[in-house]
Amino acid sequence: MHRFIFVLVTAAASFPAAAGNHILYECVDASGSKQFTNIPSNPKSCKILNIQPGAAPSPGPASGSASPQARPPRIATPSHFPRVDRALQKERDNDRRGILENELGGEEKLLAQARKELAEQEAVRLGSERNYQRTLDRLEPFQKKVKLHEDNVANLRREISKMR
Image (cartoon, rainbow, N blue to C red; front, side, top):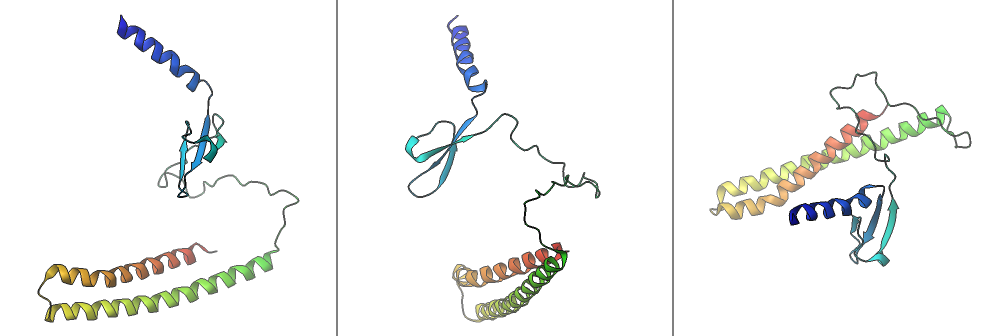
């Protein structure tokens, strides 16, 4: 009997929360990190975010299941919104492409230099060091540098390929 009353009271207490209370708080602590909660720990450092039912975006179709012709509907641009003519936009796109290609060239040179330095350090390893962990520790910054430049080159290439 006590178990039934406990379940009944717990269920009754949860109904007001589910019945339309969609208030979330964005709290910022002293270090600047954000926390989202429905119960603010310090109301003075929290801002109310009012989330309406059904406001959450619905997940789109999986990337492999969408047909190539399926695109999201175009949203009409307001009439008072500033417009850029095609020639000016084309010029801006060309400038952007040039900047990205210059960045790509620079990153490829830095990648080649980082690979060369890593190869030199690996050659030193074969000759003098006997402690394997010390060798790994010494090579780690060179490997990280190569990885960083490889990622930068890949990201720049991806960005250039997205351009029209």
